Image (cartoon, rainbow over all chains, first blue to last red; front, side, top):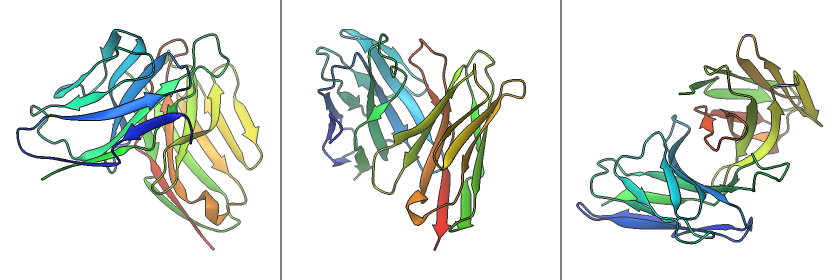
Length: 116
Length: 112
């Protein structure tokens, strides 16, 4: 189902708690991304990674952290510093630069995070 | 940074009519403009894209036009069908860079 898997589908966070969203891809893509989707605000970039052990902040990185220890995996941690974490989180990946479709984003099916 | 504005936020059309969604971008260096379709409860998927060296691209019932001077691009869907109902996102980026900026989305409803 697309080769990029997000889990869990639904996640609940308590006050002061850190939660981690999983994103795994078996497409052999170098670049991976995390987007946050809020109603009426489109997709906003949280973090992206172009290669293992390297990642860059996006437009709304505050309150989030990531790691990229393996090519296939790009987990996102929503920390207690993120005061408004309720949103739909989408992970994406894109092919290597030498591929003609390297600009195309392949999305996972998303994780809905809610605050208890 | 890049800023992409998208209009309208909602659009209702009768089945068989055409639908047009418009976007503007701010960074004149942007040269790649994809459109993504997100059906209810599903992941966004690329439906068409255009690079700045062309002014128009068509794929069956969908087409995209680009006006670099005005920094404006549009999605055109002809002969709309109920399965076209979805949220459509425009986006802009610079080829070779990984950062893609999305518009706020247009919810298209095709009325049978």
